[in-house]
Length: 119
Image (cartoon, rainbow, N blue to C red; front, side, top):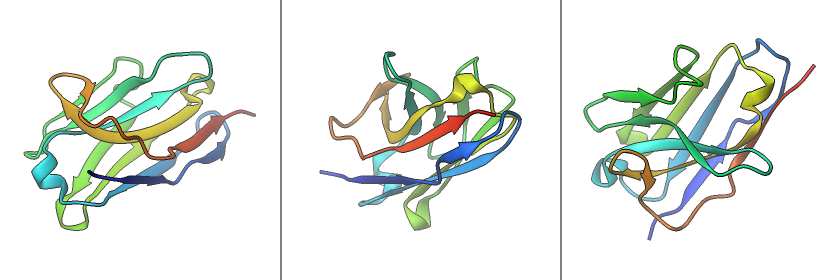
């Protein structure tokens, strides 16, 4: 089993930035692909960014060019730098391993971190 602890969310104005962190309870190199998901109220959870062990990244079209995912295997931590935030980015953000192109690897989800973009 693995646990994820997300942090770094908050209230930010449109156009602002936030950096999210996710610490895993086990070596993320052994997990492999890692990703950030988000779930807005009334919507399904979606994958917004994925990173491989080699550092290759993929992004949802809605965040491409604004978000940057990175990882530090030595710290078992995955980051999400979010720039030029929009109100539609408001959601609870979670991290998880990624199986295949977008499926979460683990059934267990952390508590997530709330991101609210509003003036």
